[in-house]
Amino acid sequence: MDSRIEQYESKMMKSLDNLKEEFSTIRAGRANPHLLDKIRVDYYGTPSTLQSVANISVPEPRIIQIQPWESKLIKEIEKAIMASDLGLTPNNDGKVIRLIFPELTEERRKDLVKDVKKRAENAKVAIRNIRRDANDAIKKMNKNSEISEDEVKVLEDSIQKVTDKYINDIDKTTEDKSKEILTV
Image (cartoon, rainbow, N blue to C red; front, side, top):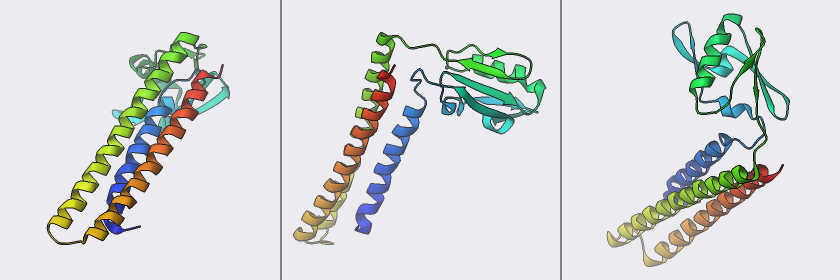
């Protein structure tokens, strides 16, 4: 791979990784511990991730169980979950907090798939913008006589192949996430 193309491929990879991260936070009716990644708990005055103050497990497909290292954190964790945009009410028995995920309605599943497709389309636009930036840089190098017309063709072909690869990856990731959401 040409080093002049690598920087653009790296940006495309970041766009795909960002999309996958966004998809991991979309609730598909199944318990996914990554839904809690953005939640912070006040631990002795320091905002800390749930993973750093508790053991998080998925004992059943629709339940996340949170067992704090210290029992006095239960109230803090409950408060943080209630303040988040998860839309779940924590249940606690004094030792553990359970988050129970309700079954999604057919309509809600379809709305989630629409959201997934919209986010995927935004990621594709980002990839195409990176391709455009790369092509502009290639044309500028040609204009400044840094590279020949033949090199322009080779570099443009390379950037198009990389673009196609990432667009296909986005399509595959989107299809997988949509299937996950629609599976009852």
